[in-house]
Length: 278
Ligand code: AMP
Image (cartoon, rainbow, N blue to C red; front, side):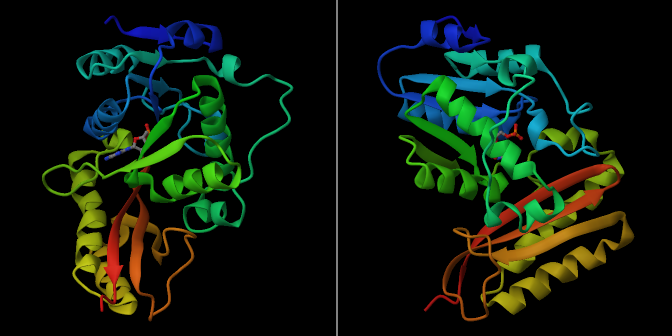
């Protein structure tokens, strides 16, 4: 089947086939992480739609919207190689009317941890995801665990607003040395990349412990070793359902999440852990 490029709702309706449809929302600059999401979608659905849209609403005024990598032709090759059926690639003007008024509020959960450092980010992200859901009308949608708070917020939105969509989370794909794949990794110099490895090393050090304080201490020690070249925004050990910090006696699943800047590039990473196993 030829890959169809859809620009608007009309194109999407024409391309629609019977059977389950899976949506994989992305901002493009596709890498192995995105490919693994597409493969997971492929297993579950008859038709796979990948959206490629750099969403201005989820970037702050001093963030990298204008310099975010845009590699559309290469992305189409990736989608063809992965057997994607439809690429949805709207323009900013198609997505947002100049007089638009209404958006989604991500609530308290969108203002903590990552949200505390990126005001408005999660509101903008949820708004575009809901619009994509309405435009594509998928049966299921696949998101990466790499953006753990995003995945939790989308699951909350689906539950709180009764959206008839199944949300699937896919594990983080990493380089052999542990660096989580990200479209932003291409900004890193060789030297900065070495510094960036501290994020995944810190998470691994934390994951070797079992109790919250010990986990936080072990991870923080690795981040501290990196010195001033690593500018840490946060290291948080949170309940994945709420993103609130867990207490010392918390049992069960938790997410150890980190965000830091290396030079001009801001990176995030996380691991899922089981605390205080009985
Ligand atoms: P982005 O294009 O960065 O907005 O990401 C689109 C989707 O790919 C999101 O659901 C991300 O969580 C997911 N993703 C990004 N990086 C990775 C990775 N290294 N492994 C798995 N999924 C990823």
